[in-house]
Length: 167
Image (cartoon, rainbow, N blue to C red; front, top):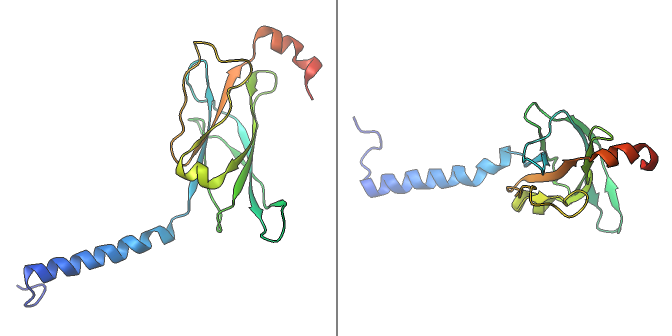
């Protein structure tokens, strides 16, 4: 039984290669870019769970210098402490991310303007919370497509003074 007629092995290989290249060129069209948001406890490297985040894509119009927000997404982390979002089309220039952690318990830079292309290509790690990291803090790296926030538990004195200094 001949599947390809009288074609030689070289011609069959060339046809199969052409089909694969054609399919490879168009596979990205059906997939949206995704960003993962994580919050890491710098004292032990564990992910925080049960937090919410508000994520707004930000677009810059070419004629204006201001950045205009579009719809805001309110998302709850999963049981593993991860938030996965699919970026809308067209991909926004920046993302505005605001975390809602348990007040009075965590010290975290909970607001972030993130460059979308940098997050997709390299990943972004937020600033270390509070004072200079001690030797017990873990080193956290972001993978491409990730935005990582760093958090630490508040000390006893920070929790004691929190009601006096909260905004």
